[in-house]
Figure 1 (spheres, rainbow, N blue to C red):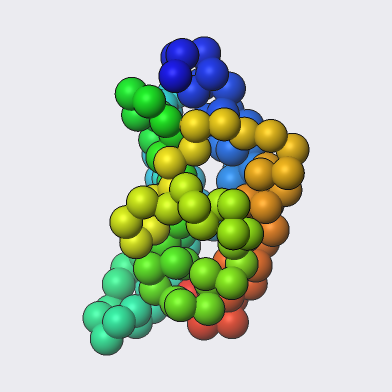
Figure 2: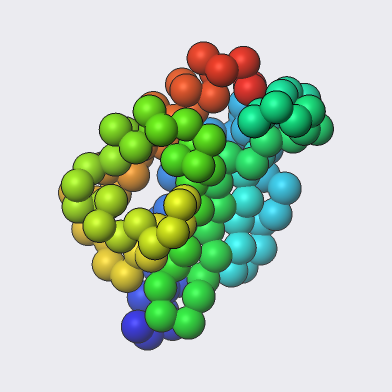
Length: 125
């Protein structure tokens, strides 16, 4: 995938994720990496954590990695994703985004919104 295509996908998704600030905080905001966390101290998986990772973007050599921690911490979050988007899931919480159209962007927006609500419900924000 061409570098300009990856940058276009990254920039579009970064704008969507930036809409979650606040209540989330961007701990990295670089040209090729964007990370969002909740700065609220909370217990996750039995461990006290000073902050909770929510998600991130990283430009890789052939895709944009869209990392989404709610998938890892709560099985309910899987229902927030369309079947098409789930096909891009590699591992437990990383999506390999190689193309981004209006439908896929809408699916990501819905997942981000519902996952933010899930973090609120868990008391992590």
